[in-house]
Image (cartoon, rainbow, N blue to C red; front, side, top):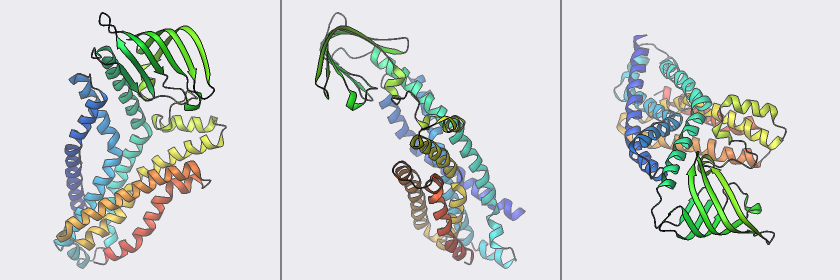
Length: 359
């Protein structure tokens, strides 16, 4: 037990070091991105936004940190001849992986909780904070600014009234939620633009509507729009249902039971299985990382780091990018698409594990 505790302690130390290092490296980039998305936000709004971004990154960062911790721990055991001493003492090599299995199980449960419950809610919180920042931006537009664009919503004026900057003249507007094929361009002589009640309100006078695809033109006089700021931040689909990534696993499962369209049900099922497969990747990284560290040893830490990074990048590319394409454009079983990269990685790790444990 002392030996197992010793290995576990080494892995926890390496894991903590990796997490702290990545957070330190990530914070400046996240802060720049936050300032870009919340240009008129104060320090309080930015301080509330940054932790939500870091927490949404956690399910992806933790597995990579775990992989590096495994490679570093077992590489150090091999470099310091402690692994040889363990084998000479009669301990079975596979038993020395139990600390990694225990840590992988704990992190896997944490990651599943994050993917299933927290990340969708954090994304919703981010959108709410961005909407607050957007409201402040729209309320404090520079006098010379005559263009506003957010996620497909586009508004442009020739000039703004110097006495009342909320009055725009010779306006062109395109609505955010309209599909390209159904798009209607609005031209107006005058527009009164302001934020009110969590919505962007646009009152248009002298409206001329043009539907480009059908070539339809109409004169409508006055038109009033109240567009929720949340829709400018993250437009809903035409059905009005939030995208799967904004829903918890429980909500997705309810939708799967109620969904009648096979394609939409397939995408929802893939989302659930994808989150589950990403949650158990720690066990795959243990099978790959431990033998990699034992084979390369401490003298080749740069090579071990490069190879470990390759494992992580390759897995996420297959699981998230290729998997999403296959799920959306093929008839392959959802289970195969979602779990295929993990299963292939596990099979590929077996000869590597056999070679590493014999070192």
